[in-house]
Length: 343
Image: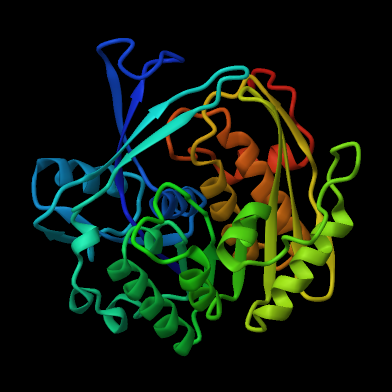
């Protein structure tokens, strides 16, 4: 099984520790991006994976390719072209102060990608699973069109298509509403991954569905209705998975997920996560875990538990990338959550 992911790879510049941006003179430089993070997770789990993007033809682009390749991800089809590297600045929050992201993504190499450069017949040759997110089509109309063509081509070839809606309000600035774009892309998805707000903002579904009880706890019957309605509106969907996060503070979250396969509705273990190290990339860790689980276990409930455990562990790791193994994730699934030293 080989998985292809498509999206933008970014340079991440983060203030040290919990300092505010430019409170100190140092910024930590790493690379990250939703679809690349998924490809790396899968490679770490032993799944053959490839990442497709466009990067500037300079030394920063060289470093970005090397970073992806070192984890075992196939980078042979990455396009090098004029343009710049997209950047995001991250200020890590603490307690009641939320983390904040500033994007600098205009005129990047991928944003100016020519549709003719994305030869989907070639790129999808030998691929059995194709994954994208709603971040890429949020950048500009050009990438929205290329993404739509990609999922159409993958679907026509019988390739499983997964879409993480990943609503990013700061990116949708080119005159199209998310629903106009993402509804067309979702028509070709087999597996949909989202949060409640993602479904509301990107698909216009569920604004009238109550997903919280009067005591602010999650209303799982509401989430079942939300996923049922989503699958009714998009009959190609085989599985709809919604991540559930309750934030007590920036450092203290509860994380779980629910899963609708058209017949059964599952809910995962709920993890209480304290002293969060880095929340960025946890959704990508979930997507990577879910894809691995669906490929490897052929059991929807076990796949859901693997994905949730993988996302939980990502909260403990600095950077965008989830550097955990199958064995570590399965240990947590079996209840090994004490954090005791393994000797």
